[in-house]
View (cartoon, rainbow, N blue to C red):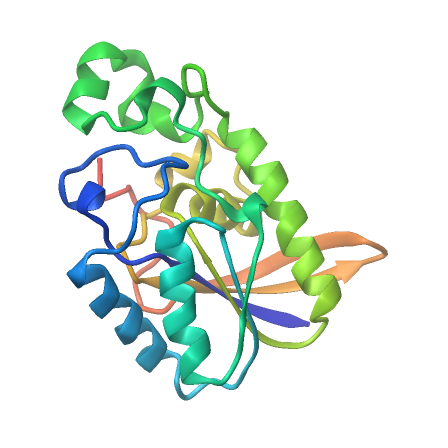
Length: 209
C-alpha cells in the first residue's frame, strides 16, 4: 500500500486576485513560497520515498521545497495539471459568474469549461498519473503536488463520489494537503482512507462557494 500526500501548490498572484489559472504557468508569490516551506515542515516527520508534481511552475516550486528538505528530486507529470480553463483562463471569478452563471457556483465542479476540459477528463488523466506513481512506488509515503480542482476529483474518486457530488467536498487552501491510501489490484487503482491533515471533515459544503 502507498500513502499519498496530495498537496495543493502555494499561492500565486492570480490566486490573490481570484483569477482562473488553469494551465497558465504562474509562479508562486512570496506568500506561496512561505506556504511551500510550511508544507515541507509539516511533512518533515514523515519519511518520503518520492515527490511528484504537476509540471506547472507553481506546483514544481512547491514540490521542490518539500523534496529538498528530504534530499529527494521532483518528478513531474503533466497529467497532474489543473483543469484546462479554456475561455475562463485569466478571468476573475466575478467575470466568470456574470458571463456563465449556469456553469459557476457548485456547477463548476461538474461542468465542462467553455473551450476547455471537463472534470471527468481531469479525473481520468489524474488517476492515470496516480496509478503510474503507485506502480513505481508500491509502498511507502509519496507526495504529489497538484492543484485545487485536480485534487478535488482525485478525492472524489477516493470517496466514491461522481463529479456532481464532488461539489460537496471541502476545498483545500493553498499549501494544504490530504492523504489517501492507494493500491493496484490486478492493475486497477483503488483509493481510500482519505484524511484532511487540518483535521476537518472532507465531506462538507465547499467554503469557497
